[in-house]
Amino acid sequence: MPIFKRLFLFFCEICKLIKQFAYLILNLFLDLFYDFIYGINTFAGYTFPQLNKFNDEVRYQPTPYLQLKRIKDHLNLSAQDIFIDLGCGKGRAVCFFSKFFDNKIIGLEHDNEIYKFLKANVKSLKKHTKIKLYNKDVSDYKFTNETIIFMYNPFGEKTLLKVIENINKSIKKIPRKVIIIYDMGNKYTLTQNKVFKLKRKIPNTNFYEWSN
Image 1 (cartoon, rainbow, N blue to C red):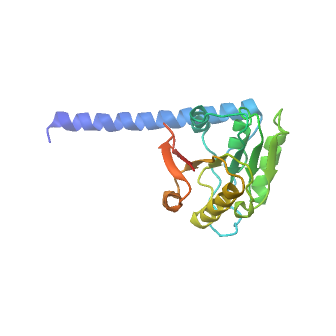
Image 2: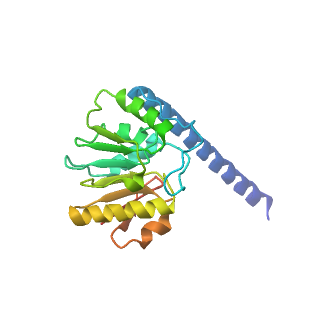
Image 3: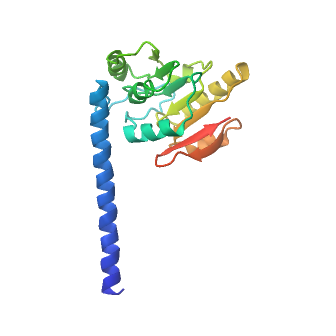
């Protein structure tokens, strides 16, 4: 391979690494900034997750604020929408979206220790009365009229299958459009269901939009 071509490829790799590093620094800055502005602490640090019903829990990791902002810009929110975060951890997405939803916000977290951080973070918000929190396994949650369901790969396939089953039951009882915003940790499971269809990948995020 000619030396100039090798140098060019090497330069391209260096540029790629610099871009990735800059993106990480930007995310870290925004995460620190928004946590400070909201008066909360949603950073990871609790590394031993409590077992869930199907033993497929995932270690807590918050969604970067940059991705949350892009998801918010992508969604066409209405006053009637009800947002729920399944496996919401310390509540970063719950706190963030509470600034933009006029209606109810719901957060579910089964881990007792993480739930303590979640309650403290939500309580510190100026307007937290519209946020409803549950310390329970998501597979036991009975959906009613929720319209936007957010999941940042919080659990494994078995729990996800049960959650989708419960969502489908609620749609039969209360017909409505439901949007699932989901980081594609278990893409196979969602593609097998007959109710929700993949609509699009949300630009510049790891999330996809599914709806019935």
